[in-house]
Each structure stands twice: as C-alpha cells, then as structure tokens.
Image (tube, rainbow, N blue to C red):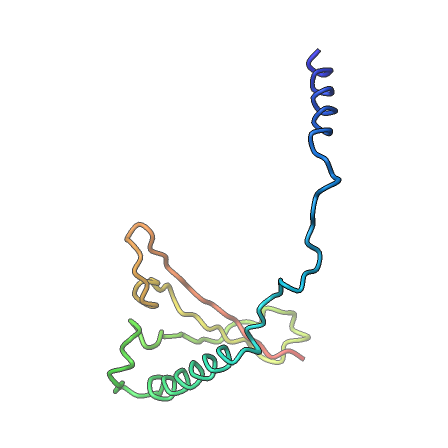
Length: 135
C-alpha cells in the first residue's frame, strides 16, 4: 500500500511544476565577470605591493645580526633550517650524488608566524624537503 501511495505522490508531484514559464538566463549583456587583472586598480595595487615587498626583503632578509626596527613586524624574522646530507630517494642509477635534506624542525605557528590562536587551537608545523640531482 505504501509503495502505491508513494508512486501516486510522485506522479502528482510532476504536475505541480510547470516547465512552460521557467526562465533561464543563458547570456545577458547585463551580466559579466569583472576582469580585475586588466583593471587599473589591480595594476596599481600589485605595483605597490611589489615595491613594498622588495624594499622589505632588501632591508630585513640580509645575513646580518642587526635588523631595522621595521623588520620586527613578524615574530621571527627567519626560521632556522637545518641541512644535512642524506641518501638519494631514487634508485642509484639516476642519482648523481647524495641528497640534501632541509628540515625546519617543529615550529609553533603562533611563535613562528605570528598567529594568535588559543592554546587549544595551536598547531606545530614542520617542513622537510629532500633534494637530489638526477641524471
């Protein structure tokens, strides 16, 4: 009985929607995507960001012990990366030499990147990369 009632409800529900007056917008001259890349606001903003980032990198990422006052905006101006020789991850016939392992160690993202997460939401981050010359 339930199956028959469900089938009847399905059939009658098909008549509730009429497809004769459904409008679908396919192409309209009033709607378009905004191309921000070609816009002058984007060009000016990108140019300013590039100039500021270049100046900041020149001033703050030098190999020196004395940093300018404006370089203290990040909690750590740099993160110590440990490098060590390791075995090549590929077969010997394509490895030209031993590999190099780059390891940041475990970093608390609040301390390293200046996030302000609650203690219960804190995350440790570690980046390890191995590089090798291949033939």
